[in-house]
Length: 290
Image 1 (tube, one colour):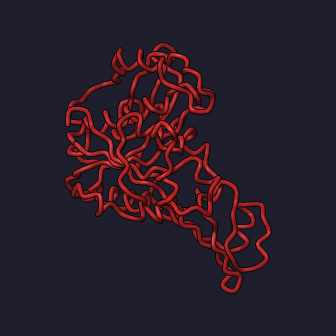
Image 2 (image 1 turned 45 degrees about the vertical axis):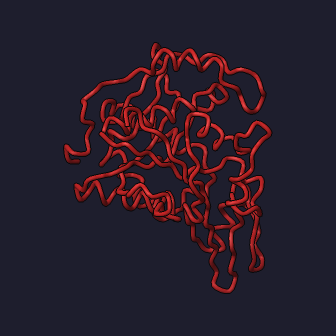
């Protein structure tokens, strides 16, 4: 990886500011309506700074997804290059004293002109392709895209996810980039697979915040909703593979609602194929110092 992609400041592990730690005590657990426990002091480390953590970061990142999502052809082909080509963009949140792994985040430098209308409908797949190409070519990145944030299961409900988003923005800022966008996967959309994504992301609670919990976290830490990404991930497989991935019989052609999917999968028995196109919502975050 070229020096142009490495962090400009050469900073080592970075703590979150004291005011961030203190204000976390006031965050609300959306599921229970009670205050989060104050999180421990958090430290941001990148895979470039701590290559010894990469395997643990990979394991945590692979843990929460439905089986079929791991079969996206672009993700299968390119995800492994994140830690090879852009280790300074992959980070972990550690508990400062114990160094226990609280969360991980993956992002990638991309070429984007700043116009929300040019953000690709293909979301995750498109930014992975562009980002890996950008890194391999040594091209100048103009922005970064989030790819994933995963919180350790035992730390869910403690406000860690919001600090992980802030940490990602800080990591991106270390590279001199001013734009961070995210093809956000709405966590409760699977409960409403027949609702169009543009309708779903417009739903708001009485307090004006998004109805979807993950979108709500993004907005609470300053994220701005831009527009839907209609086909952020695409999974194609044989009917037999879809039956294995979902543990469901698919005996005729049609649209099937499957566990964990944000929209139905389209099954074509005549061709022996099934296709799933997962939507997302593009959001934009302010990068510190931008």
